[in-house]
Image 1 (cartoon, rainbow, N blue to C red):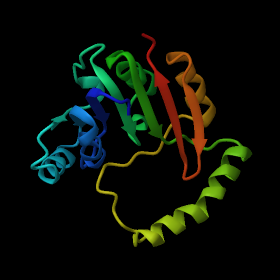
Image 2: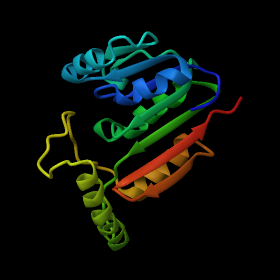
Image 3: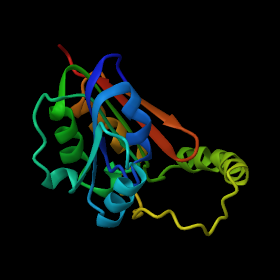
Image 4: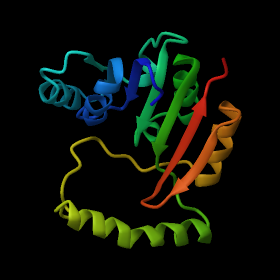
Length: 182
């Protein structure tokens, strides 16, 4: 998150955890989620945090202001929508000099993909045990399997966001980090 952040947006905010964590570092943070249950939970958990608000809407249905946000992020949400349209909408909402960070999931296709995924299994179990979560714990937020492969995500991200940095991580995640030119 950039220093001096005025406006931040969390796309697919779920229960608002990231919104609340960003609140001390921004003048105002908006959480956007299409799940009415998640928005209700986010509002309840964020009572008393003055500089946040939550909007019940999908990204592609919401009229985002163009060049408005200093920081836009989305964690484990973009694979629930059309990737290119979602990435384009978030890109267009970022103010010149602002940043966009996307963390999400991709579909395994190659032997390399499956090998990389297998390497994340022990780490996943370690985190689950450390956080005392059971394998059958419900996530609370809607879940969806990704339909794009790792290579497809990388290629489309770099096409839509020239100069972006794409990284693949353990625990079946990737990150895309991009700064909008001034």
